[in-house]
Structures are given as C-alpha cells and as structure tokens.
Length: 370
Image 1 (cartoon, rainbow, N blue to C red):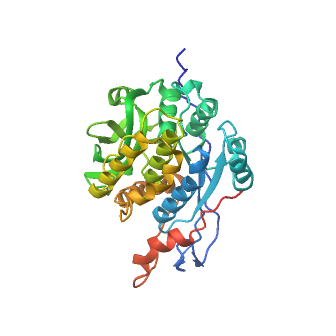
Image 2: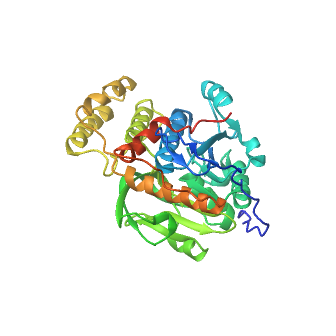
Image 3: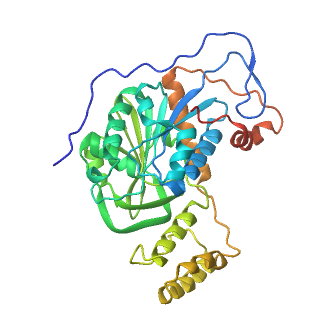
C-alpha cells in the first residue's frame, strides 16, 4: 500500500534567539582567540546516526570534523541521537547509552538544523525496514521544527517516500566508488562550488530525476551516468538530500570494500564485490584483481588478513574534501540567516586565517551533549 505523503501547513516552531549581551568576548571555537563585538549563540545541530555498528563512530567523527571545518567563525553545538529501532550489538549499544541521546528526546529538542544518516539496508522495500517508522516520523518532525535538514543516502530515499510518495528504483547492481558530479543549478547551497567535482557513492538504489522534479525538488548536482546526486525542496524547512556520501573520510570506501570481501570469504554473500569505480589507482586495482582470483579459488576467511598487502604503497585521495566543506559551510550560513544571526568576520592576523581550518577540526567543541 502506498505511504501517505505529508505536506504540513502548520507554522514552524521558532528557532533559538541570540542571547543579549554587549562587549567584546573571546571566541575559541577555531582554537584561535579573537574579538567580536557581541557573543554569538551556537548553531545547534542534531545528528541522527543510523549507520551500522562498524561505521557508527567513524560516521560521528566524519560529521564532527566536517562541521568543525565548515563552521569557520561560527560556534556550533552538535547533539548526537540514536534510534532504538536500528539493530545494534551489545558493545555498540553500551557506547550509545553513554555518548548519545535517544531519538525520543529529539521530539522536544530545539535544533537549528538536523542531519539524518542512512542505514544498512535489510529489506527490499523501505517500509519493511525496522527503522522505517522512526524515519517517517523524523521527516514529519523536521519539516515543522528545523530551518533545514540534511538527509543522507538511504535517509534521503526515505524522506522523499514519506513526503511525496516517490519510490526508489534498484540499479540491479551496486553503485560504489568515487564518481564525477556535475553542478546542475545555482542555489545558496551550491554557491562557490566548481562546475564538476568528485564524491563517494555507495548504494543499490536511485531516485528518478523526473519524479523528483515533478514533485518540486530542485536538482543541484547529478551524476552523468547515475542520475540525481544532491537535490533540495523548500517547504516549511529546506530539505537538502544527498544520495551519496560526501562526508566520507578517505579510507571509508576501503573499509566498506574490506567488509564486503570478508562477507564473501565467510560465505555471507554469494558474489565477490565489484571493484570500486574511480577509487583505487592502477597498481592497486591490479593487485586487488590478483587477490580476487585467489579468493575465488580459495574461499578462506583467513585470506582477509592479506588484503592490506595487496594495497601496499597505495594512498587514498581525498579530493572531495573541499567541495563538501563548501556545501556544509553554505548550509551553516543558511541556518545562521534563518536564525537571524549577524556573523562578523573573524579578526585573524598573519597565518592564523590560513590555519583556521586545521585548528577548527582539532579544537572545535563539537561534542555530544548527552
């Protein structure tokens, strides 16, 4: 049965207002003290982390580091939320109980922006996933209570299904690797981006561009051979949806590839994973092809320990870091504007401004509040 769509007309809840106060105060969010005329209230961002156990902490680090660099001179507070509907192992659940808030606490939270990650698919239909009810509720809540929400990968597919009844379509194979993206529209979120950049993708399904545009979504970037990459819809909240994983660190795809190879060697999947597009260099691909032939001849889990040997000397590139930082910087600027924040330039001197990006990732207080 098709899922009902939701186009709420209720007024969005008010966002936090800046605290009153005068006088110059030090700002340490970049690790470089400076003076501004008034204190700035932090942008409060929620992260609902639905990624599987093996990727949970890495995902947390990726978004925290990305937001720290993209924030530049803006103080940002990151609140971490986890949904009990996402299956977890005992060790991961113990970590979540200490470092995360329950998603049930999000419904009363006052957030400026929200990021919702995808999750490892377990069912052919999104409505059959154990976490579908919470993703549907998050879609409804975010429309009413955030200035903007970023939906990542599977979460983007769930959000458009809930909001507009658009059903994802399977590729019939796994889109996996680093692909060229083409800028498709001028928009506040794409300001400062080049006409082309590369970004990681790893998914089995796609959302048809024609279905998206006919429902009011604006395509911001697309893959020449695989459709929409990033798109947006302006309602009560600005929904920014990304089918890929531009937040990934350089080794994230390698960890995923190693996971899939291990599943093949343990007999948990029938086919050996295909090579990742545009990720490994020529020598690494040749070494991995030789490893693949050996693995298919001798399906032994112990072989997985030899995979790093095949990649000796290969260093993954991180050429998508600059464009994704620009995307998130634009998003934070949008949130600040919606909050009514006047954000002055930092009074950085000498090389301090050049070092700010590195200092931000090292020292910004983007810590969980739970």
